[in-house]
Image (cartoon, rainbow, N blue to C red):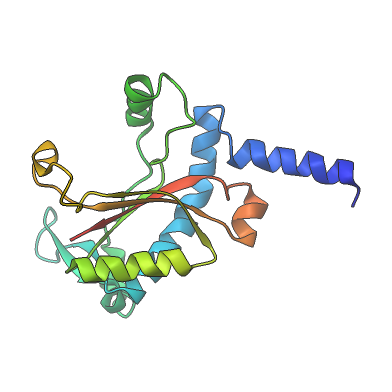
Length: 187
């Protein structure tokens, strides 16, 4: 490989994954990365007693929380899983206009998933797994369980927000290794 070719390829990947200049580019990356991120989230939940919302069998509108370890064995329940969708483009535009002066570079929650836990100890276990996972790179972290945070500002809602990248051979080849995703840890 020539240094010039390596530099050109690296530049293409960086343009496609590190610096998103258009909303179309960001959403193209999100479409590729969402199923990959979902698998990572499933693995994390399985290793740390995480739950996901599943449509209840007796009602089309209600949900119940089920452990991922149970869902792995239950194909029917897995089909009723309520995964968060990629952020709707209208919401992304609104967020960019209000908070980011029209820039896509700070928009990190287009691909997002949520894991529900029974306790803070289970959240801590998940965070430890993320920290030690060579395929996951933590970009930023918000601990809204911190007692110094004003619970009144969030009407008592608490979570841990982990903004991360999935950095694997596949995501690198697809040009999405630089795309930031959100993992919400709630209990």
